[in-house]
Length: 459
Ligand code: PEP
Ligand code: CO
Image 1 (cartoon, rainbow, N blue to C red):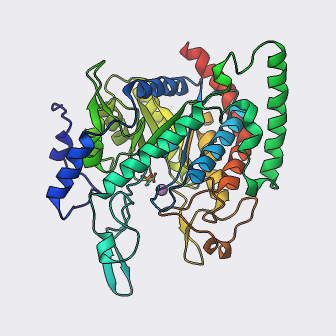
Image 2: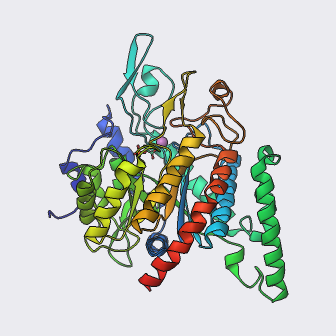
Image 3: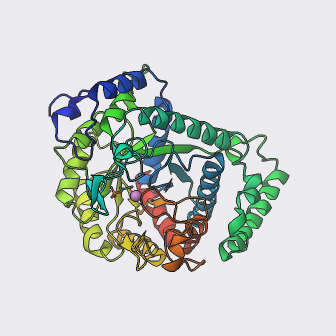
C-alpha cells in the first residue's frame, strides 16, 4: 500500500468533483479555509467512534437523519430546531422500543455537495451543468448560477458553523432535557395519530422521571437526563474542501477531517482505486460506505480492509440502500461476506435512495410504504443471518413538506406540488419520520432481544 498523504487522493480518479473554471480563486479559497477553526474536535470524533463500537456489539442503535441537501435558502433557526426536535422524538421512540441507547447523528451542518445521475440538465433546448449542491453552484437554471463558484464554500462553512453552534446549544443547554419532552411536538402534527402515540410515550417517561425523582435521581444530579450527544455527518464528496478541513490532532498526531464527526462515501464514488476511498483511508473519523445494488460483496470487503486494516470497531458503517424489493437479493450475501471475513461493522439501513421513483405528476418521490418495507426487510434479513441490524439512515426534515407520498397524511401524487421544497431528493416530513419510528418499533423490539445475545457474546 502506498503512503497516504493528505492530498494523495489527487493521484487517483475521483468522480463527481466539479471542474472549477477559476483554479486560482479555488486555491485562494481553500487556502483560507485551511486556516479556519475546525468545526469539530478530534476528541469528539473519537467519542463517536466509541459509541459506534457499542452499536457493533449490539449495545446501542444508530439513527442518522437529516436533509438530502442542506441549502442556503432553507437556512433558518426554526428549520434546524424542528429537524432537531423530530430526531429527538424518533430517537426516544427507538430507545423505548429497543431498550438501547440511540447514537444521534445528523446529516446536517455540512451536507451540501451532491453526486448527480447526469452531469448536465436540459430544459427547453438549453443544456447546463446539473445543480451540484449549494456549496458548489446554484439551483437556478441559468448559466451563471450553474457555474461552480469557489466562494460558495465560505458561505457553506459559515452556515455549517452556525448550524453546529445552535445544535450544540440545544444539545447541552436544556432543550434536550427529558423533562422538556412535551415541547418537542411540532404544531402541525399535534392532531395526528403519531402525536397521540407520542403523548403516551411522554406520559410513560413522565412517570419514570417522577419515580426516579422520588428516589433522588434527577437532572440536577445526572446530566445524562438533560443533555444529549448529537453528532454531525455528510458525504465526503467534495475532496478539495474535505482536504482543507483535515488537520493533525496535536494530542495524537493523527489526521482528522474536522468538517464533521462522521463522513461517508457515496454509492457512486466508492471505487476501490478511486480518490474518495484513498482520502478516507487516511483520516481517523468513522466512515460510512453506501452499498447499493451494484456493489459486489468482495469489493466492499476490500474497501473495508483498505479503510480499516486494523478492523477497529466503530470505524466502518455499511449503509445498505438496495430498494425494498432488492433487500433479499443483495443483503444476505453481503452479511455473509462480512461474517466470513470477520469484519466489525455497523449495519445501517438507508431506505431512501433505493426507493426513488417519478410520480405521475412528474416529481421525484418515494412512497412511504416502500420506505417502511425496506426497513422491515433489512431487519428480517439480519435476523435470518444472525447479525445485528444496528441503524437507520433517513432523509427527513422537521418541516411539513409534501415530498414523499403516503403515510398517515395520505400524501398523494397530486399533493406533491403543494410544499415540495427539497433541493435534491424527497424527504420524509416530520409526521412521516415519526410514523416510521413507530411502525418499526416491533422489529426493533425483536432486534433488541437479539442484540442482548450479541452483546453477551461480545463481553
Ligand atoms: C445521499 O445519501 O444523499 C446519496 C446520494 O446516497 P447514495 O450515495 O446512496 O446514492
Ligand atoms: Co439523497
